[in-house]
Image 1 (cartoon, rainbow, N blue to C red):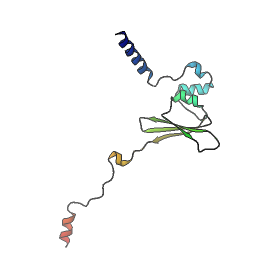
Image 2 (image 1 turned 180 degrees about the vertical axis):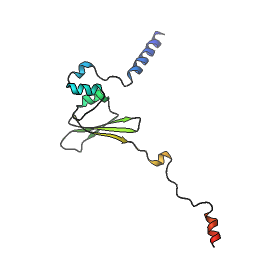
Image 3 (image 1 turned 90 degrees about the vertical axis):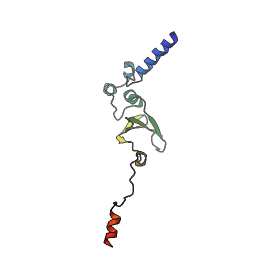
Image 4 (image 1 turned 90 degrees about the horizontal axis):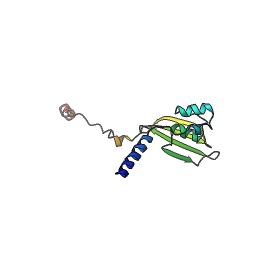
Length: 134
């Protein structure tokens, strides 16, 4: 019985921590300049932020893409999605945020939605009109 209560309490604790909660402690923010601390607290990202600051602000990305085709800098793209539709890519060069690609929509092919255009069909009375014309 006690074991079940402990498991239930642990489940409630885990579920309460699973939401959009604070991802940092006040002590961890002290290493950042005051303006970056405010951006993190407000859930904002800005060019020049470190990867750690972005992680504190937005949390872990859904996908990380490492770009090894760029010679000059180590580049990563972090992909965040909202509502499974809106995609934001954050581009990091040598650990600093260097680009934000926001608002891109993930598109599904029309065939998967059942919206593929069917070929045009002539009207039902078109055959009768042709016979009357002859």
